[in-house]
Image (cartoon, rainbow, N blue to C red; front, side, top):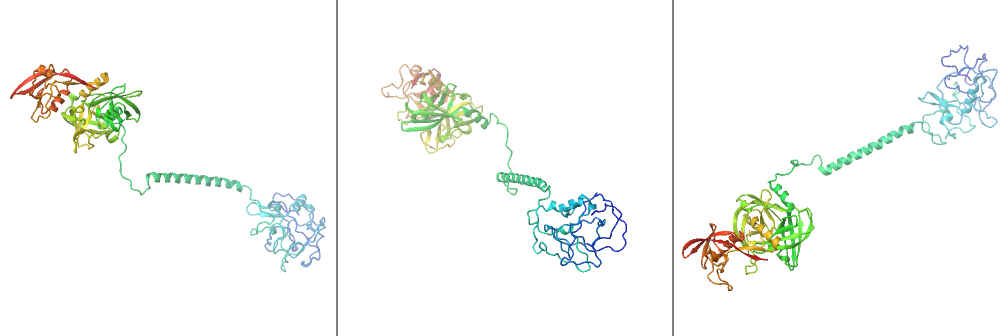
Length: 570
């Protein structure tokens, strides 16, 4: 059956329209129309005469047999409009119109009469099935496009061959076709899932990718925030004010600058030998590996002990004794095969003034690279240390520099440097509160601000002799002193001792005119109050130096000059 093109004006019809399903009055044949719009719909199938439950309108003609084409009476150009909204029915197998039953064909299926005027479109329509409208997409589509699977009988609906619901009296039968098969509220087809509309999967992929990217971004931001809070605390945590870090070094004459310059040349010594062991300090003298320290530091090693040297950078090396002298309490050891040695510069102890700033470096109680600072408290302090042997052979006499820089056991042998990091003394002795004066290895009292160092001028001479000859020379005047004398000055003994004359014949004292019983009160104009002080004054000079001595003899004072002799120990 042809459908008029959109906008075609139909000729007016006279008389009442026949009811739905009745044959129309004969009309002149019309040429087949083109279809610019949707394809035409096929007419509803006609029910056979006498079908059960069928009602006819008065005066209606009998329909043609099913499957026969009416070539003499082609159908009207348009179907008469139903007097009411056509009923909706779930898609599936074609259902008979209300009030009529479809006559089974030769194979039991229903067929509708075809209009020859409709052309091949009508035949194609009958083959494809009814059209199912799709809301919003421009019109109905063939049912085969949306229902790829055949639908079975619906629960509660009429089965195959059962008559459908009858139309109400006075109403035209409900329309059969596309609108009857569409139900937007129906359940999915039982034959299988409906294929999703094309393009939906393509729209979902960007959304999934975006969600994953957002989750990764949120996780990364959350991790960064957590790490920041863990390291720097939360927003409400209390943060104390602090100054910014300072860039750059220190002034060379500051304690930090002095320590930075001197520390690479300072070493720590660990000595083991026999039943004794000890710890002390030393410093590098030259690139040949000679190290200067105190005699009482290396003395436990004896002749078969072991000395280990640890540099400020942590390197260690074995050392051997080159020479030592108990009278000056100095010793020189040497390491071999060590590169990158940093010798310290030697200063001049005669140029030191009281009040000059000094820095002491050592390993007190084996705490290496310890730095303390102070000033020169006094000069030419006559001190004696040692004397454990009882015969005086291990007593050292030092015309020392006094400092308040803290010096403790383990500092012995370490350098005392000035503001230019030049060595002006060797830390050797302290005055402890519980033991009087003494060197490390004696009483283990701590510093009370009374430290004593061997002047570098004296230590330099002794170190050179030890390196060159293995032994040191001592200046002497060739007399025996009465160490028990309680008066002021140093008195020459009146009796022989160990078969020796009080004044050595032909010695420096005899040549200068010194006699037994004389009291020496001054050396180069400096007062002398005891025999120890006289020895210290003499030891501060080199053999061969000339001294001016003031003597008290028979209540009279006289002055003499003498040239110092030499004695060696080793």
